[in-house]
Amino acid sequence: MTETVDIRDLLEFCEQLLEPENYRDYAPNGLQVEGRREVRRLVTGVTACQALLDAAVEEGADAVLVHHGYFWKNEPEVLTGMKRRRLATLMAHDINLVAYHLPLDGHDEIGNNAWLARELGVSVNARFGHQSLAVSGDVDHPVSTAAMADRIEKRLGRTPLVVGPHQEIRRMGICTGGAQDMIAEAIELGLDAFVSGEISERTTHMAREAGVTYFAAGHHATETGGVRLLGERLAEEFGISHQFIDIDNPA
Image (cartoon, rainbow, N blue to C red):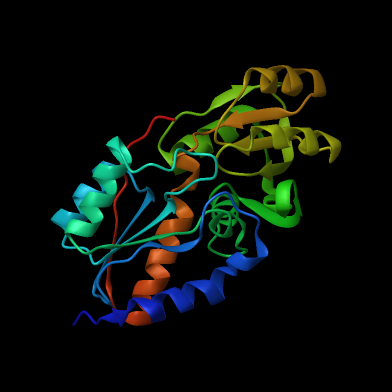
């Protein structure tokens, strides 16, 4: 039988688990839009886009939990167009919107980086980069660049863009999303490879000239793990219904 949980208790659990106060973030973490008090059905997804909200309405969700929420620094403050439609959907159906950004990248167990490291067979033994979000470690068995690209494709369901040398990979760094510039620190650490979501023009030259293999595996694809794992943890803790809905995004 599906239970219900007070949204305040759900949020308290998330706060204790993720410790958002330890991060300097670009958007508010926690409850972003208030809905009904009792939560029975939870929908999770990467980004609180209109398609996810519409799917949540169809599922009768009481709360939507995402990695990419709203109210980012330096964005327009007016509630017009796309932003108005999204907020109107949430408020018309009394749905809570909860978002955790950097805390859901950095968590040692359910964070995006820790999750992707496990998926790719990397034993994490160090952290580096902005707010120590990136992880690095030894690959379970030394693999070729082609073999690692194949592993990424199988785990994430998309073919990564690979730049830099084709070589044996023993030590690899990971930081999901838009962390391509952390390749500079991966180079300093002497890592063989670095995985992130996006790529910039400069990334190619840095990888080639420094001899570090770079895998651009997709901002969206590399960040599907953390929010899904958090949803599963909440369902287990409180006995509520949980569904992860993956809205396809090629970026």
